[in-house]
Length: 326
Ligand code: AMP
Ligand code: TRP
Image (tube, rainbow, N blue to C red; front, side, top):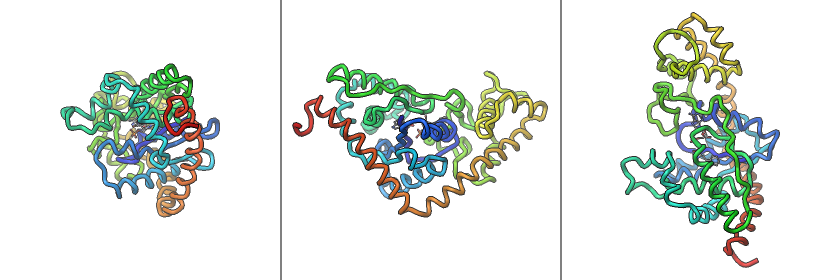
């Protein structure tokens, strides 16, 4: 299996509960590849020195969350050049309409469709290259990535039909609960790295005081019942977070907080989130101070990834008539 995460922006509770928490157990059951996708971060303007820092800090956070470079392959996208090579071939077989239809492209290019970088449009071809290079069967992701995986499946199928079978057609693995954690200040939106409003998200690096403050000011629904329901999107979101960080079923939480009102519920939720993040934060602080060690881990990950990706690329080159003749 394969999954990726962008190094830029704030790593938030949605990333943890919707993606990374699912990645941890897969290390024991699958050949697992986890990639910090810095080339995807280059689809919007970037600062070179900041990008390098963010790659290291994202790697430290992933390890702190439980990814273990001994049990999985943890690497950086741009350290394995085959990603760019396969991306180009997939860009050439993708169709304009397929790329333009992507919700993420439409959202990110809103109002500036002439001046936006072309990388935002071809972004899903790079994402397809990421997964197809490793012939992964499954891609654990949050709900927002479903459309990109669908396109990846289309491109893999089209390549296989045109040039002969080189790729596994991968499946999206989306866990129902936690697949879409919502913004604390607006449950109609997802919690997102690119939202500028600090009150919308809890960062993995937030202090206990900040966490308590953000949860205290989270939007709630009308009424005062702590219950998950279609007409209570805000409380449902908070219950989902509570349930995932404490591994307690929602009905049990509903029972526990019956009649207590929102305020007491929020205090308990803040404590639960602080407790869940404390060991991650501690580990992160230890790891991030040893830059050399992270760099060694990533170099090792890249060389293991490159061996696998190189085998796929040799097949792709042979099938497409590209690269030096064998
Ligand atoms: P990104 O923040 O776009 O780099 O996403 C990294 C991973 O986190 C992807 O698998 C996303 O689907 C997942 N993710 C991002 N935001 C959320 C959210 N609000 N709820 C659940 N999963 C999310
Ligand atoms: N586009 C994904 C996101 O924003 C990140 C990503 C890049 C990814 N390549 C991937 C996810 C390959 C899964 C598989 O979340």
